[in-house]
Length: 186
Ligand SMILES: [Zn+2]
Figure 1 (cartoon, rainbow, N blue to C red):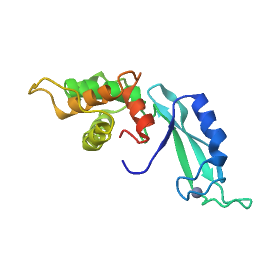
Figure 2: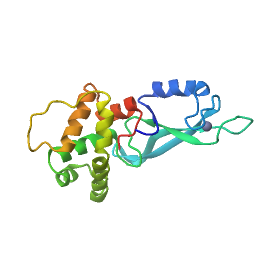
Figure 3: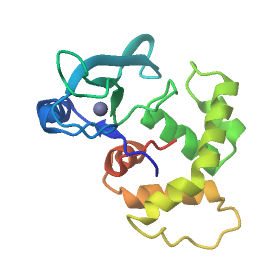
Figure 4: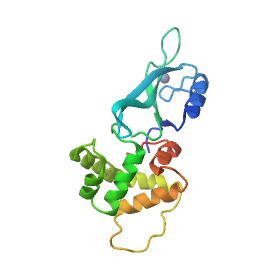
């Protein structure tokens, strides 16, 4: 899945990560002792379309004040946010389920208001193009569920069923995917 990403699900998890920063190697340069907090990444999503919410915490690998870091920054994401999309994982999950079960255009009509049709179509394409990567990542956790051989079962629906089978107890399977596999879902 490429570069490992960092996620947290709760304030307590973030505090635990923040308290360990001094002992954590930088993901870029591997130096220990240079990581410091560096503010927030904020943005809109359907849970807060009018006001920006925190989407990720920034961490700086400090090369100042005699620290030996590389000077680069990285993000520790809240597990239910989607990078580059003003949508939460819950909103994305609902949209993809509607689209996979019915039609993409039907799902676009049902989606809550703040995203344009074009944006939603782009989101669907991003998921569609990432399907094989998602499937490979899920196979590391469990086999795909046995599904009756229905001609209507499209690949997208199978991927979503696999996702749900991999995280059966998760409130949102996409957030669980990101947090457990340390990778962006799309
Ligand atoms: Zn570094």
